[in-house]
Length: 611
Image (cartoon, rainbow, N blue to C red; front, side, top):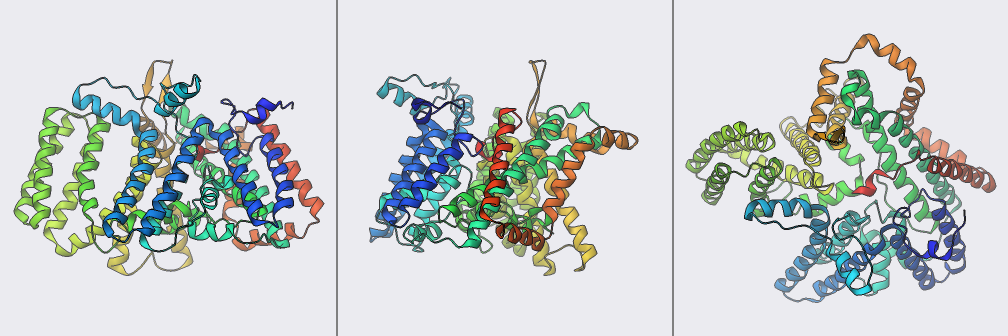
């Protein structure tokens, strides 16, 4: 392929840089050579990696590169000022500024359209969301970037969480801030994990920046093994996506219930192989450069309950949400003011999504809010009972308006409020449930301003609350007796609940003949109805025979996932002992296979690039 100097330097809108392009592997090969020349000199090595990381992000995200620079500079100084401040007022002020600057970016680029629609409906205005950064760059440089579309900057959800964890840890006194802005910039922009994780903590990464390069023979073997497994997972994920998952989810009504179920199973393993495949590659690349990144997945579908699942799935995000959101809200000890206030905010958000902002709903919302605040102020049951009657009347109004999301939320609030009034102990337990629900609600919202992501998060939050309540009441972590048979049933139950949640996560609106649109929640309903009432058992053998290669690949994927960890470690050990030239040959062959898939348009961007 012919690369001119412009192609090497400039950002290509139609081909942003990622791990799937030949150009990336050429870039990384050159970087490895330069790294070998500089790795004995820590400052030179770090400078090289910083330049390479910034170049990678520019080639991946274009002018959004400046947002990364902005987050890096602001949080570097906010952390220093937090550390130097001698009064709690200024410490909290600088932390608040860090939160506002980072979350402000995230809110704007993820939820600008939703907030604009809300404000227009509230004030009867005609505001239009636009990309102010693109407009500023056009003004300063004379470029012609499109300002009418707000595109989510690649990796912003990950590096914002990463920089926030740094300032919060400094505020909590867990770490001292670095005084070298270049070290901090490398921590924020380190390219292997920049765009899709794992989310790295400063306490883990910053010390490695100042350590001399050291890589054992076993670690080199592990790095190449991770590259191999990561690309294998990606190839399998894309094969299943193209030949099964996308076909079913784009036209669920044309397939049997069995095919819809297989499509759901296919997506469950596709998203795991796609995301963990990226993570494997990222960890392998970082390891070759001398940096150790945290593990992000531990065979999540082996989980025996929903809590166990979140200890195995996207570990860096789940631990981030636990340490910086759930615990900040009060964890299992108490309910914070923010948790209390989040309930009416969640209801308002549901009303917005349901477009049920009529005068009646506004009246009931304010009455609910008044009773809610009065009840919280003194915890007098009278205000609780008044609030319950208001919720019943409001639920009736929402039912007539067909505002079902808001209706379901009001019913949930009614049940929780009623149980809290009847039991002081239950009120305390609800604190944990409310914090869990809010954490997972925001975790769902983190994926995007869509009802399907919110439902996905709420379902997980609800399940976590049920499991934690069960654990408190029975002192058991599993619903079934502790033996292998019941443990297997627990895994099956947990896996199918997760698959149910994945339906909401994957379902997109469907256009029919370019005009009529089936909304994402309707797509979920179609899939569930097909599975429950249109399975068509008699056609199963015929379907399997017609698409035997697809089902064999699906079976292979699950077999690879459920292989015992000891078997995988043994395979890695055998691979590590191979001669270096043979390991390199296998990697090259696999990279060529990926390139072939890219050129044949059979490979797709990593799923979590869109978040």
